[in-house]
Image (spheres, rainbow, N blue to C red):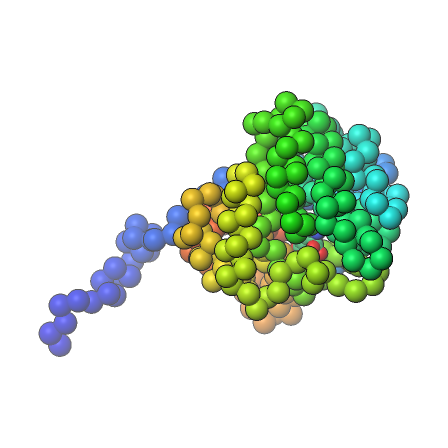
Amino acid sequence: MDLTIRPRRLRTCDSLRRMVRETRVSPDSLIYPLFVVEGENRKEPIQSLDGQYRYSPDRVGEAVAECMEAGVSRILLFGIPNHKDACGSSAWDPNGVVQQGIRAIKAACPECYIITDVCMCEYTDHGHCGILNGHEVDNDKTLEVLAKTALSHVQAGADMVAPSDMMDGRVSAIREILDSNGFETTPIMAYSAKYASAFYGPFREAAGSAPSFGDRRGYQMDPHNRKEAVKECALDVQEGADILMVKPALSYLDIIRECSDAFDLPMAAYSVSGEYAMIKAAGKAGLIDEYRVMCESALSVYRAGADMLITYYAKELAQAMKKGDLG
Ligand code: PBG
């Protein structure tokens, strides 16, 4: 055969294949979601997320030490409070569960970079992501409590805040309160294109944050939409976001690609609880090779244009990257 161009030439050995890889990743881009629960001496397995735990503030340092050991030094912190009420008041309590968790982590491991999830759904007794007016979330009233919450996280020592509520105007509300309190250098990672997804199922069990009535379609995005994601990202850019995010990841690779092409800001993707749970379950059932599917799925998110990946597999992926199975 007279074939001048043979793509297979570049696939002839591992050394060459690794040399010509188009997608390069590093553990520096990984962010590990971590749940902190009130109380003492608690490390509880999360039923819906095999291999994940909730820690009380006095033990959360153990989880962080494991992350650091694996090569992951960035975490996304979620709080599970004891007290819930209609307006989610324990979200901004200076002695609330996240605020305690932040201080404990910083005391145990000052090098750990802490990003906090800012949302009301774990703190409200109705489980919605804001303050209700009848059965609807009141956008503008919610902005005040989100801003107060973000400020209290930063005052407790958080390095970055990540609003996940999908209210209109939350990035500017948070930017304003941080700036007027001397935190103008604290960045905001905006959950910009967050879809109303069934993939959050296991998380809601983990955080006890399922809405008690209705659903989140009045604020999270309709999975049918693409242009709307670009609009949401553009607004967050205008409002002063420092990092954009698309969530979930695997079913939204097209959105990651489009938004990372359209904007100059770093792009994060959140590979959510349902994505993790599916790979775990299929691996456990012997249907797939969990390790290889984990690597391939993460890689697809980076190839789609994500600069950072938030994932429950962060520790395992960091190890895979170090070995060169992904990298
Ligand atoms: C809070 C929040 C959720 C997730 C991250 N922040 C749940 C939701 O919107 O219902 C989901 C994360 C995951 O599924 O891993 N609003």
